[in-house]
Length: 246
Image 1 (cartoon, rainbow, N blue to C red):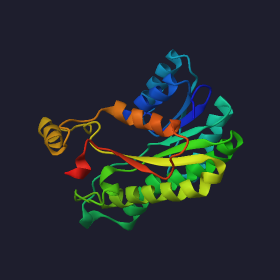
Image 2: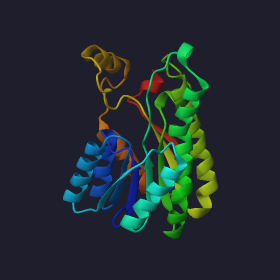
Image 3: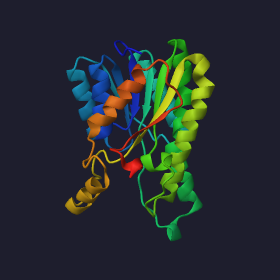
């Protein structure tokens, strides 16, 4: 798919998401961005998109609520006229010790990671069908697709991200007749978490075969590749600097 004149909806317009949005805009797409709390970051990304000569929409949504997903897609199509690409990056990465983990915590992770991906796809697909096809890119995690629950305290996150990979495969099969290609990205060490210490950052570098953090541009490159492809669907691509082979 060529992006000139197309419309992409991206959930999560902060940090990596902002760079992905700009990469899509540089290829000619108009961009709808959602945010939950980070309005300033989303507005900054939208301003940068407009500076490239593309249209941009910013819309607040809690994607764990299906009605918000419907409203987000409606706003994107209503403002920008169509929908060709959905990049679902919104996520919650939160450590909860097992002794404190409740069924509600697990459900919350599934709502944010899995239910949202389904609800957004369900809302987006009719518009993609009208356009003759589309692309959906979900986000999972390198550990979840490598069958390696390495870090304690992330049970809910790990299980939900593993489900995202399964949902991606199932959606790819369901939507193939509509020429809607569905793939996922499994990031590894891309950007240090906010608040990470120098020692923590260096430890990740030592554990990564390529010896460095990837940077958000590496995610943007893979998103562009998954949008461009016309024959790859149901795949999950690890972007982890080789962490899964060590």
